[in-house]
Image (cartoon, rainbow, N blue to C red; front, side, top):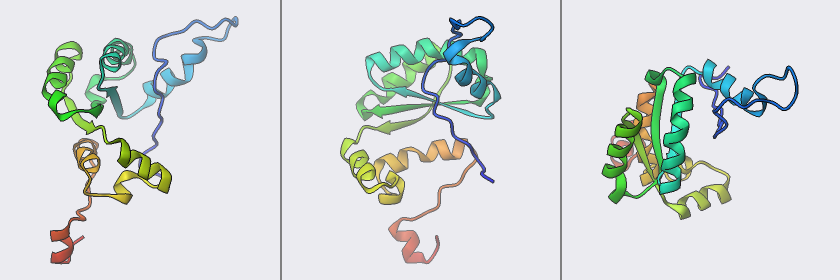
Length: 156
């Protein structure tokens, strides 16, 4: 048994009439069903103008499916110089605070994919790994300490 089940639904939040009679909401039905049953939802916004525009538009459909108290907003591929502006913009447009900003570190992603591991497994102290700690905490988890001083002190 698993503590969490993760479903990456990406998009398809809006109701979509199926071309088939009696079929219901068509291609978006599964996405909407998963979200309406989810205990928690991590809504990921890509940190570029098109990503932000699409996220804000889709968030309205998400609000129809999920209690917004159970939604945690994460901004992906963010530049630290843009974090404050993005945080303010999203709070103004969707009424939610951002839990985390994941920096764009293309080489770290490539290395992890090539190695077949997560970034955290390959480099637990990386900026990407550290940026996800607030998400883990918001979901009620605990991030194990793996730094040099922790190892030196004999605690894990």
